[in-house]
Each structure stands twice: as structure tokens, then as C-alpha cells.
Image (tube, rainbow, N blue to C red):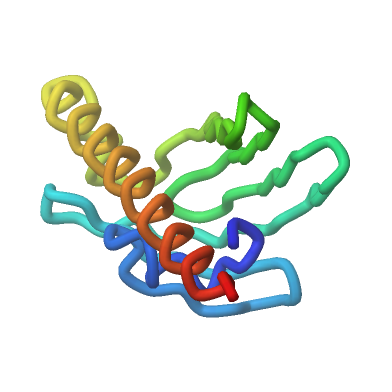
Length: 131
């Protein structure tokens, strides 16, 4: 599910659009509560199922890296999302100092929403696979 970038809008409502631009790459358009979009390409450079790592390079309004790290935890799975990016969108760079609390809150909202959306999506996926 995490490697299928084109399907992110199905479970992560803030990912408003995903356009496949390569076998392991997509252009994503994201918007949370604040009235601005972030558009960037995500290129999955590392896909290691054994280690439970899916890592991507981000290029566009966000430049940097993002990674999903997956490992067993009790009877379930622990999923950790790590992101190290620089915002390159000029408007956000100009507003960064004065609007930082709002930007941080907006990002937190998007991350919590993605967590809920993925849990819901996976629950439906698992329910559909049961005999």
C-alpha cells in the first residue's frame, strides 16, 4: 500500500492528486487545512521488504527525503514515518518565521489524518480478504 503512490489519495485525504511519472515515482499535490498546495515528485529509491524500509527522494515544493519503516510489534505492526525536507515554496519560506505555529499545526493535522486514513483503508482491505 505504501509503495503504491498513485493510490495515496484513496486513503490520505490531504493528498489531493497523484500522477504517476515513472515506475517508482509520482507527482503529488497535497493540501491540509491552510489554503496552499504543496506539489512535489516522490521517487522511491529504496524498497527493502526484508528490512521493512521504503525510502523516497522528494523534489519540488518539498526537497529532501521521506521514509516508511515497518516492523512487527506484538500482534501487530509498527509503522514509523520519517521526513527530512526543506520547503522551497517561496510563499511558505517568506511566512515561515511568523506563521511557524500554524504551519506546524497544519502539518500535524495532515500526519494524523494520514494515520487514520491508512488504518481505515487497511482495515477494509483486510476485511475484504477474509474468507
